[in-house]
Image (spheres, rainbow, N blue to C red):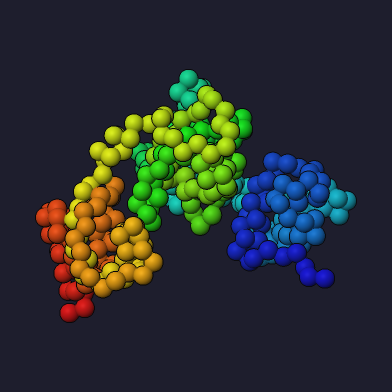
Length: 317
């Protein structure tokens, strides 16, 4: 049976934390102490044995800590040099400051009592640790999206979302029944039943552009877009023209040109007018296809792609 031992650095930190904790909680039981520190009773007994042999130089009974725990309850004496808690490092203080900032953004403005307490904590961190007082946090996920989304999950309500698919570079309108939010690879994903597709789907939460509750109950697939102005969506698109020199399967899929070439693209040059929601996507798509595609317009975007390609070539020089 393997021993329940922690990593050396974690154990050292725990030993330093044990002394001030025991000073403030004289007579605590070994079981409660193990529970408070999140380790087994065997590990706590091992830690207490180690502390029992620690003290000031000289290491006689006069300098060693006086620790009693044989009865199952712990008392400590002669440990004044380690009676204070460890100081919070700058990095730890910065992490705490960021956490307080995130917490403050989620608390309603009417809870002035909580807002005041958070401000007091920020002042203490700034004064005692030297952490910058003005720390800003940029959220990838819009609070206006995540809050009603969580409410819809808890209330089992349907919602309508505008969703930007990064691969196809399309914005679609979906009527969904949100089920759960999953954290994976530092991203938040929404698992939901899509009533348009009549199937379970997974959406990146940060790609949900807008969300609205549905007052009516949906039965079956509903592909209508009556609840959104399609002219607003079309006005956001960026028109561009490409010249296809070699219609490869990758090119056809990337620019969604199945309606022009079908399953077996033929080798022929063709000029196509398209539109996209993202200038960045157009640049990456054209560069990724190499010599198979040439961007003809808009001219300013063509120039940006040329500059970007030259920068890439210069790295090989």
